[in-house]
Image 1 (cartoon, helix red, strand yellow):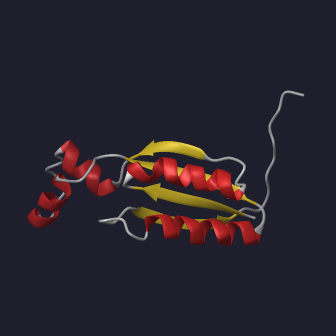
Image 2: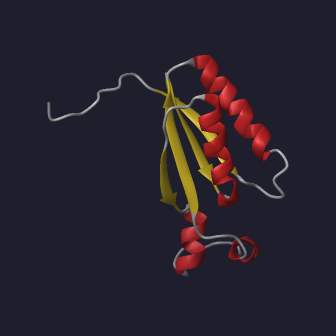
Length: 114
């Protein structure tokens, strides 16, 4: 059992990814608004943090926020199929669309008032 994380820089792919999850039988996911550290430095104009001028210029044209999607997938075959399909969806992205990684999950406990 693993949690699959996708930090999606190009949020125009969000609906396609969620549609693919549904198609594959991934039963649920959580989507968070997120921001990378470099983006925060550039958009907050943190002058106290040294950042190469060319990198700062490069990041100025990027979107300041991204989406982080995560889902727990119990079945290893489904996990691998999902990874392959998401990579296929994003293979022709005109720029770096994001990053995807997994982390093993030891236990899941459903919380309830009953």
